[in-house]
Length: 439
Image: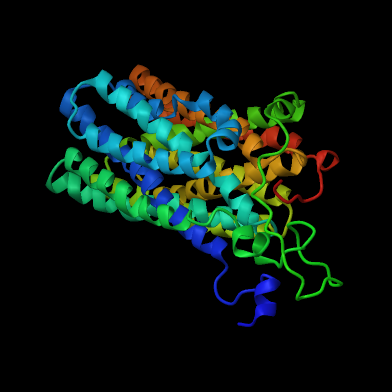
């Protein structure tokens, strides 16, 4: 490589941004796959071991999201503390807490640890769209889809492994295994990748494009190839949280989020228990959970690719229909004891999981073009996590009152239908804005 190619910032080999995506993929593989997906498998075992109610054990799932209000400070945290410190700190908190959980038997102690785990998850998750926006613009949704695919791939791979550990040892041993993985598989790639903070440090712009010597964008055609480049410092988040919270459109999107994730959270938290209570084997429950995660990973990649190229409205309609069909299919499985209904559920609900977050982030970036993704994501993610805090407990309470999951699943299906109808208003063409790069 000659000096000219170095000056223009064009480098051979893989763009470093994809290495950052890989590190975030592996971190999510453990944080989400181990801390959320696999915890679903603990709920029936804890219920049996301690004799707690289904609402109490479901609450262990819900309190994971109790720190949701802190997500509103995500943009300010990134600006004041730094993205890397939040990201690494979140992984460490999550890993240590899972290890501590293995030694507990008191419900209130487990609740406290799960709250701390939720804090770690919030610190980790709030940084991801911002981290991706520093490295990608035209391929933002695809890169974010790849990052989030790690979450679901973790569920796909870790769920059957954890199920085997629980069967042959205990859920406590599974906690130790997950915690060790968080502090190695999840943390080490991040520490390596974040040694480079931005593409400008490598002499290239976002997406690996040559730097403009007058800024951080692509080099104009008239610029001399040999002209030295100025590596601008990484941008701090622009805009404000207040601008988002004052907009009526945000609250309409928040309503869709409430309905959508009420169904999402209720189904995910009770998935294993629903399948087992319907008379299916526990091994099948873990297989369905893993398959759901697998479809989430695949459809997340496809959804990200589509969102970078085609209409947000198409994806929005598709993902809401998938959620509704998933809820109805799981209800059908409990009533008909049909394996085909479980397969339909795994495919459609997996799609709703994999593409849902990507759709909402793309929608928000489209509607709030002057506000940095760190602020709009933190505001919206607070709504999502608040819903995920309440939904599993509410679904568990309905089960405790009725003694079966039929009424619970029917209620969740109604929420999915309402989310679809309200979302049609959100996606009206008159409200649409041009496709936007992260700011």
